[in-house]
Amino acid sequence: MLIRQESLTSKMAFKDLPSSSPLPTANLVLVFGSVKRFSDSKLQSQLKERYPAAQIIGCTTSGEINPAGVFDDSVQITAIVWEKTTQRVAHVKMNDMQSSFEAAAGLAKQLKADSLRTVLVLSDGLHVNGSELLQGFQSVLGDIPIVGGMAGDGGAFVKTLQLFNDIISENMVIAVGLYGNSLITASGALGGWKPYGPPRKITKSDKNVVYEMDGKPALSLYKLYIGEAYAKGLPGSGLKFPLAIIEEGKRDVEKIRTLLAFNAADNSLTFAGNVEEGVTVRLCQTNHDRLVEGAAGAASLVTGSLASINALQPGLAICVSCVGRKGVMVEQVADEIVKVQEIMGSQTTVTGFYSYGEFAPRPNTTDSVLHNQTMTIGYLSEDLLA
Image (tube, rainbow, N blue to C red; front, top):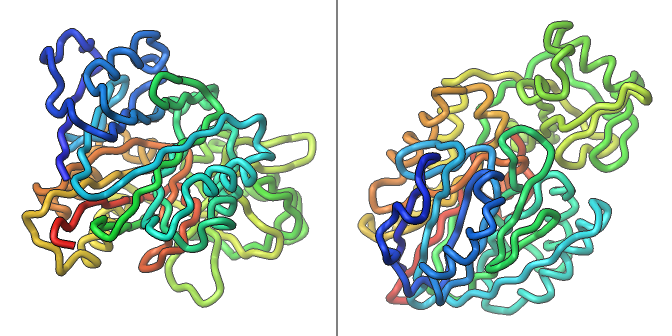
């Protein structure tokens, strides 16, 4: 596995890069950047010129990640040459959020094979139900681990864009299937959020829209708990007060839901993923140190499962973290990336983005779920002796 990276800061253009790319033979290229960058009509042709043999995929973000930290309005390019692993890339443009399950199931049928080991998914961030999307993949692929996330647009919640070779569009879902016994995969996902206040039962919801908690109007109850000052800033201020889904028999919080919108007419709350009737939830809060500890925990989950791997073996850590975490840490957001790089080691290349939803298995499982407000890491490498 060969990995090389290029980075364009907010003030750089492609003409500022060396005339040739550092890995022109790459067969997979990951690209993360701002909506402004992805709106450049020359982006696709410039990337293809540098990586003529590659499948090129990517999405817009709410912050781009590379080994040096977190950037805004940049372009982060990660080029990969698989030496023994094979890949298959599929994409679909969706009509509406209600088709998330069907869209994923259709992509999964294109990728399904006995040798499939993992799937990397990049999706639209505003017109996709992430929970339904993962369920669609799993209906066909079973417990194949899925990593990736939902595109961002800098926290504007207006439009996200996805890149597939010469296509840049919203409403797309892109999936990369990776195949073969040489592929090494691992994942980690932890948040660092602490529940507070009493547990509440969801008594009325429809997929990702919650109408009642404990039989009371959801919006009114939510406003009561976050206080008048924060209530005036909804839905943006809701990034600091996500819901934790408290799962029976689980000590740690493994599933968090971010508020995307509210409707004062019916007192409802709309979240980035499903919140089913009957589940128990609690409000969450956090601080900088807890979030960095969560990122460190996610990285440690990855390294813990790779204990038998050669420490010098190159690997790629695709970090997808939540825009809500960036909102809490503000200027110190790079601290969680520095911590991940420190734990993963210099032999691991870090890339990724800040998102509107993160895809990764629950800790120590292959059961992929939609996370919010979580640092997720999908690790990829190759065992050339396999």
